[in-house]
Image (cartoon, rainbow, N blue to C red; front, side):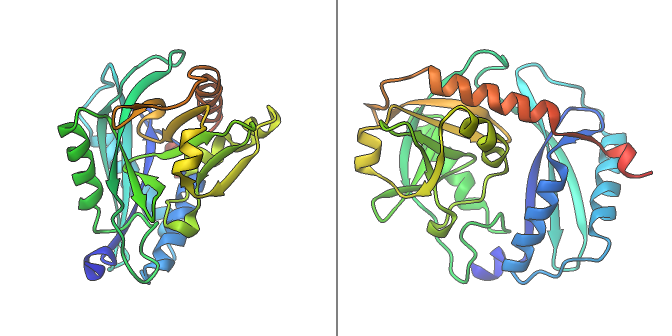
Length: 264
């Protein structure tokens, strides 16, 4: 399992369906950091490779913007120092930028790896895909990963919990969570609104007193988790979630990079 995990590293960016991606520099930085953790060599021309591979796939794609979906581009670095790109459209719960999507979640044991692999976007990603399948089978949209009796991650997003004291908690990378670029993009906005973000352990006690629980990620935007395995979550369902959605959309609008300009 570790050998497969260390065979490649990837990151997934939001794509506008044309030639622009969101938070490009942040994704490239995280890709480099995760490559180092997996002992995958970082090519000296990594940035140029990333730009060239995206330009190629954007130019040759025959797909047009799909209603009710968001565009995503995957950048993958293998052991040979080669960066490749691929695109896809991911259906979302709601295609509105103004209305929060409400979803149900289920708890699933967190996949774990050794040697600092957990918390990286690595080559052994099947357990995350399997978690999504399990969630579907249980009639849920989100799988929350549980380790040592706490939520440590989510299969394609980062959970963010508003505590009853007005602070917002997210799973700490030291517990094996992925370092979320989407979450980092809204942190400043939330703090300016008086909501400090705290990394830690999302325990049962914290969940029981949560005012709201959202999932935030490149592929889903912001979704409000209203149930966890049939139990209601939160008592402030819209205010915090809408603030997160507003922050996410603002960060997205200011975070686009036209890859054609970067290649010049």
